[in-house]
Length: 112
Image (tube, rainbow, N blue to C red; front, side, top):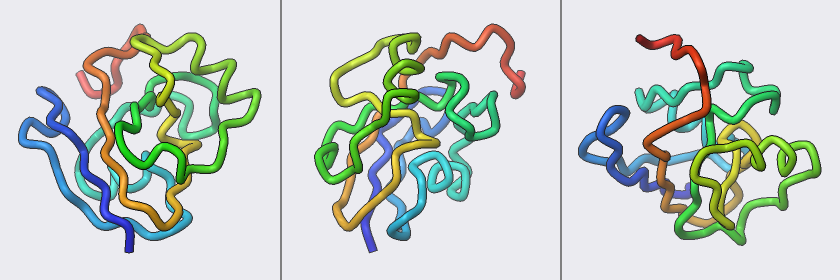
């Protein structure tokens, strides 16, 4: 079972989190299942950037992003070469270290 380390995020997981994941789960689903309430305005259909995450370790173990995801990521705040949309990043066999950016480009937050 892969281990996912979510780095500390002031709002979503101030102390960070170390969780177990199943192969085939998305990073977003793993976060939500472990009470890390990452925004996902489009309900996981790759139509926004609110679940933008940066995979600090293990990035190469993920299946490559497709053109739609790349186009959406171009709109994300704080885009980095290891950026992925959490709803599209499917976990394989390798452990990951993930950073959830401080900001999103979502104009209205459902959680506030």
